[in-house]
Structures are given as C-alpha cells and as structure tokens.
Image (cartoon, rainbow, N blue to C red):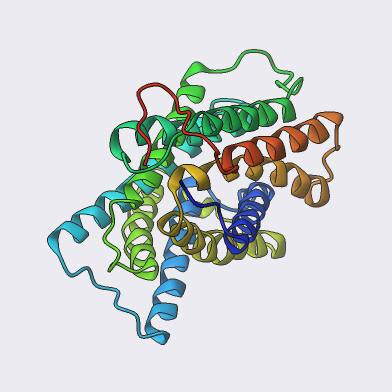
Length: 305
C-alpha cells in the first residue's frame, strides 16, 4: 500500500504553490520593464549564481559523475528552455485566463506519461478522480472571464498546452535521475544551460534598449530570480524526488488559486464567487487524489505497486 504524503511534504507543497502563484503578478510587474525572453534568461542566470554559491557554501558536489547523469541534466535544462519559450510566446497569442487553465493541465500529462514511464508509481482510480476535480476547480476559477476582444488564437492555445506537456515531461524525467545527483547540482546545470540560451535568444530577437528599470520592476525581478526560481525549483526538485510524482503533481492546481489571491492584493483584481468554488473543488480534488486506498481498485491497464 502506498504511503501518504507526510505533513512536512504537504506544508512544503502548499508553500511552493503559494510562491509560484505570486509569480504570476510578479511577472506582470517585471514585464513592464523587461522583454519576456530576456526576462526569463536573466532571472535564470541570477538564480544559477545564487544556487551555485549555496552549493559551494554547503560543500555539495555540483559535477555530474557519469555520462548518463550529464545527458539527463542537459536534456532537463533544454526542456526548461523550450517550456519557457513556448509559454511566453503562447501567452502573447491568447488570453491570460486561458493560458492559466491550459498550463495547469500538467498533472494530466504526468498521469498519462506515468502509465508508460513510471511503472512503479501507483495510479488508482482516486488519483484520476481527484485530479479531474482539481482541474474543474481551476476551470471554475476563470469561468465567464474569457476576455472581451473576441476570438482566441489557436496557435497561442497550442503553444501553452505544449508548455504544459513539457512541464509534465520534466516531472517524469526527474524520477530517472540517480539518487547520488543532488538537488543543488540539478538546479545549477538547469539554470546555467537554460539561462544563457534564453539570454542569447532574447538579445537576438528582442531589444536590450527596451529594458526600463524602476523600483517595482527590480523587486519583481528579484522575487522571480531568488524566490520563484532559486528557492522554488530546488524545493520542487526535492519534493518530486522524495515523493511519488503522481501525488505531488495535483498540488500544482493550487498555483492559479494563489495567483488570483496574490493578484487581488498586488494588482487589486476583483475577488469572485468563482474563486470560492475553485478553492472548494481544488481542496476536494487534492484530498481525494492523496487519500490512502483501502482496496486495490485502479484504472484498467494501470498496474499497482
């Protein structure tokens, strides 16, 4: 029988989703002074420097000792770059609320990929039901807020959905990393490969002269680099490696809920009844997905541990 998430993991997961939820209004503020791709590249570079210093101070091993580890790290970093580019370009071609819904379908990608690539992860029926309830909660959060300029570009939707798929691939990929490869090393490789790639791409297609710094922009940038990237990605990697991936993934549905709460405070966006409905559905979905089963009922075609 699969063990429950412990209290520490649950608290850390809720904290992480709050951190990443606040990232949405922080990005809106930061984008007032940065072109999008350059913003992604520069924040990853700063995060990489901070994580490297952290690893050195703790005397952690940051080098990959085997060819397999180096290969996985490079693939993991490249998928981060692809995810960010797809997301940034996609958001520019569709509505923000649609982007939030589409990007937070990543747990569905994890469940689908786990069938083939995580045979030891337990996938009972309650996980599918719980994830479905949480997704309905996210959709309810944005009900009736489809925008007022008519039409949504299918290209933008497809790109954001593709970014969610890449995020799901990254979650599954982490389970293949050897236990000897520490969390700090993974982040150092990730940031120092994706950061320069995105920075060079940004310089190539965007204008450095479009960077306009102000106090709010600088504070938002520092939050994205230090809290969201350096702290957030290290915590996420630790949790995915520690726990069953399909138990961790449904918590990500809390991210847009915290995003709306943070937007109400930072950007003074209006709270709606849909928010309360979403909170109830998301909470119920996470409870159902993570309850300990008394039987062995699973979705047909999915083995038990």
